[in-house]
Structures are given as C-alpha cells and as structure tokens.
Length: 217
Image (cartoon, rainbow, N blue to C red):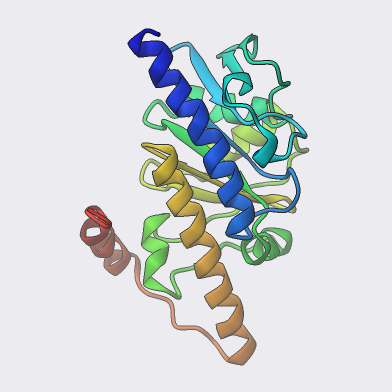
C-alpha cells in the first residue's frame, strides 16, 4: 500500500470514528450529520448517505473529485456533498468540514439568531457564531451562504432552520469547534432563561483566540 493510499485510508477511518463520536456526544441522531476531509487538490472523503456510522466499512467511505464524481468507495456520498464541496472550493484554508444537528445550536439556527460571546469558549469559533440566510438542504446554494457567513477568522456558522457547520485545519479541529459551539449554545440558552447574558467584547474574544491556539497541546 502506497503512502498516499495509507493516508487516504487513515482519513477515511477518521470519517467513521468522528461520525460515531457525533452520536456519542449528542451532536446528531441516527445517520444525521456529515463530515468531509480534503485529501488533495482534487479529492475529498465524505461520510456516506444513510449508513449508520458504526456500520461504515473504512474502505467503502466515498471519495469524490471536486466536481462531485465518486472515484472510490461502495457507498453513496452524503446528500450534503454539494455544500461540503462548495466550502472546500471557496475556502482553500479549510481541510475538514463538520455538519451537525446539535440541539441547542440548532435551536438558535431555527430562531435565526447568532450565538454571541456569552461564554469565552465561543473564541474557538470566532467572535460569535453567525447565522446564514435560509437555503434548501443538499444544495450548492447552502454551501454558498455558509461561506458568506464565515469570515476568514471564523470556524463556524449556524445554517438557518437546519443545523451547524464548522471548519478546521483537520477533522479533529473542526470537530472540537462543533463541540464548543454546542456547549456555548447551551450556556447561552440557559443564561437567557434566567436573565440577560453579558456579552464579551470582540477585542477580548480575539485576545482569547490567541491564547487558545495551543489548546490541548
């Protein structure tokens, strides 16, 4: 097995592992949510459509070209492939994309409200978690509004009436952001149930982003 093939196998394995983790961490239900990893300039690996993550065979994880042609894997790619490909195409700095239906964050997506910096860990995502305009699921247009909502320093956005999209330099990075978005959404929801949350100013959140760059190392 060549080095490239081994690398691709490892990244396809990550798709399965983090897919299972989505369920364990209550970031989605059933076969919902999807993940993708950039393999090289021309190909991405993405979670399959409608297959329970624990049943995914690593070698059968779909690999597609940037135009959506499946070049490897026995499964059909996620129906959200157009959104993933659009993000990968328009954000060259992004190596991985995670899409969840995590309940607290999706609550704010359904309200059409961003998640502000009522907790400092929002710095993992940006100065806030913005919300997109509404577009139908499984379309390139959904990817377009996601990219529009993300500035260069942002790693997450809420998909209006739908869920959450996070990006990162690795699948681990994008997944960590998804966890932090859900945590911050829960804290903001709970704080609003009691009173009016205090929101950190942007300059403080930007300062915190620098401090969190080495988180976990």
